[in-house]
Length: 229
Image (cartoon, rainbow, N blue to C red; front, side, top):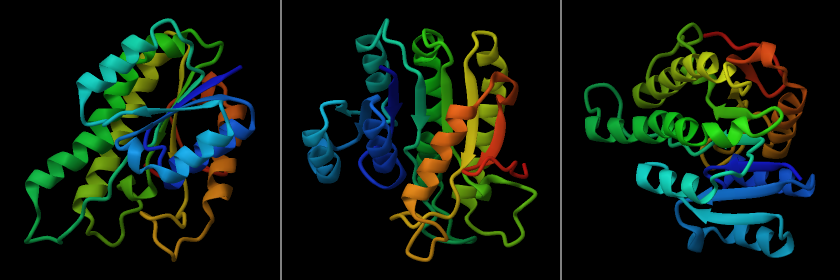
């Protein structure tokens, strides 16, 4: 049985990743900050014993390290760094710089920390894959409207960090995929999104299944199309 670890598994993309991987027969380690509030995830887990809910605040590096210690020796086939926040409360002239730091902690630092501490687990898989949920809003080339300073900068930084990670992980045979999931109708994406969450997740899962190490470090959408940096 294959194992996937998912952060931010309590809603949106993370919840749907958990559902689809569990239905496919995978062991799902579903991480979220407040399991007691994750009612949809808990209900899902009550009907599928392949889902294990784990309390994890990705801003807390001690918690990440503790989970890695607990899972020492366990092969992780796919690790999905999905937890993220938008963060842009105000526009230029009224930027909350302390909150900007929080956005970077959640959207960038957490992903790199997860990669560091779970590198050995991914190396135990026949083809471990580290998946980072990014956004086309992290593309500098595609930025034609400005704004969203916090979110755009965090996703651009994530893309840069994951590109570097791809070179380090290639030495151990672990791949890295940076995904633009599309404009999805979720709490973060809003009701005007262009696609439903199940379509986005099914597409990304297909790309993970088809992945080869020659593609490591790629920035693609859920259909596999290359995204602009």
